[in-house]
Length: 133
Image 1 (cartoon, rainbow, N blue to C red):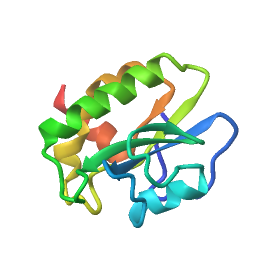
Image 2: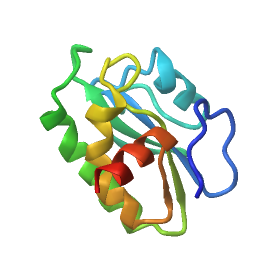
Image 3: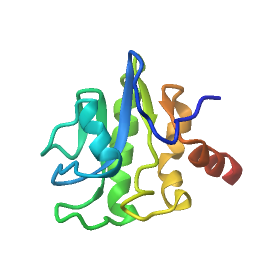
């Protein structure tokens, strides 16, 4: 089983970096800042750009969103990944840094990602999801 590294520094061909963002697209810190190196664009806080995919965990005012508000964006990402099987999506521990959620809070949002071998999760998310069943 392959897992996302704690700190993703490089991408291989066909790999996409999935990071936690904010709805205003200000990529000033954390994984969002790293995403700029992979093609994320300031002002775009949701979806695919360059070799990145942004999932917002903070709103336009950089306030942490509720799990219920984050969930549709995760579902949208999983749908995108399911339609792009030729790419490998490396999911960082979104929401577990600056948004202050725990892996136990965020991992359940990615349960459907287990259906797609092209979505690579952090080991902690995977363990939470597989021990739950």
